Image (cartoon, rainbow, N blue to C red; front, side, top):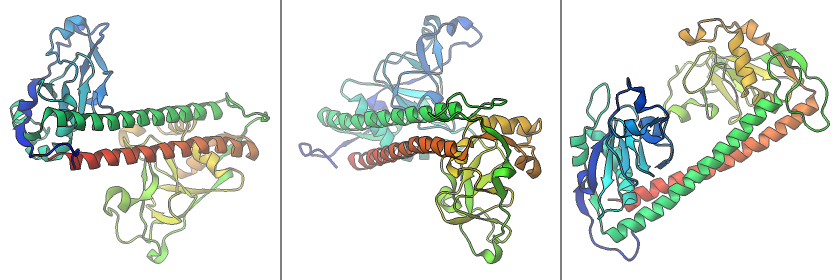
Length: 400
């Protein structure tokens, strides 16, 4: 795919042809003067990948520390070349520096820095074949600068770079929209649900003034223990942070459970599952509702339950996302649970956990407000997904 005014073959080149390759370094950490009251950006791999332009870094350097680094000019292209996040990229918006896990390209005048950024991004999956096979993945500076790519006229570079940069700017804007909505929802969750030992929340809906009453989980839900007899259902579920209860095949792209599912719990749409184990993908005490399918099966290692008529299911779903819930479940779990990867709480104790809920009408109104924000987030995330797919397509089609 090309702009109509350009023709002719692109020429093969190396990354080193694009500009000077600079490997970052770390000022001595023992000398606090290198970091105290720092204002100069100093990037590590954790600062790359979220957005194209680097406007903030977790660690900043003082002028004393910055003078001890290898400086990068604005427009330099940064690439993580050591570690598990190898391939994460960014672009310097101002003069800055990096640590030694990052190789940067100070782009020459005969090249467009945006073109170089996308040329590397489009080809990096192939570069991974050059990664040294060892405990810590690494592309050395000497290997990095010899990796092949392609170049075209500066005019074509500029047009390609401008187009893709506009898409990246739109993606960045979309990410900010989603972050703001998630921040709004988090704020509402914390304001609408009462904090520990409080009988009413900080924020009340208009016309609602009754005290929130205390209930146990078994007062508002019943445990699901129905087994998947005769393997009548073969949709195996797993809990994923972003997707909730999701088909294991869809999430892992493979089935990792046993083919004999007769001991698994049979869940129906609207049922909940609680995972007492810990993963970096979701917090302690994660509870998710089955929303995407009419039924599915889940390992008996999970605790499953179904809400009754005393509680609005959507209200309960949002409640299980709140800090109120996570703080409460952590407080009643045994000390040292984190070291064993499990929340130390029995099934009986789990269903005896105490909660405060308002009258059913207030529950429904709270759920309606939070549902509208959740729906808006999903719409914006679908737009983001389309933009990212558009960019992926163009990277594939516009580069050799």
